[in-house]
Length: 128
Image 1 (spheres, rainbow, N blue to C red):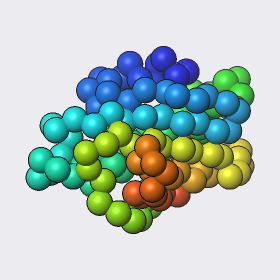
Image 2: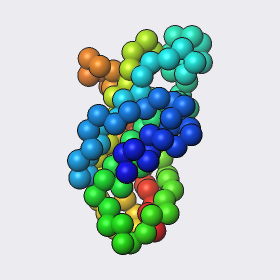
Image 3: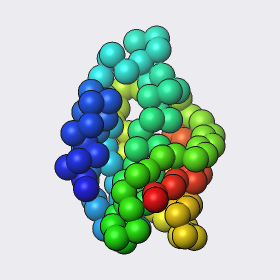
């Protein structure tokens, strides 16, 4: 599943890579690129949201029973931007909080390489 996620057109263009893939816990890295900014210095908020969403989705799949289905979508994503993010990679750490039938609830934190939290998200993901 990690290879599939990073090979999709948008995620591939973003340049995200999987650093850790464990049951119910995933870490992905978004590498710094000028093209991902809104002002040449800071990541565009949509890019940060996409990175958090992608890591949460991969966490949802990380311990999924594939006999239950593979059609997936984000149902809800709420992001809190904590600090400006620019000039460095973002590490997105996602963990599954709960699984209920087709719904998976995740929590994702985006931080710079020094561990400074840049954004936090909660996500509801559906796999059917």
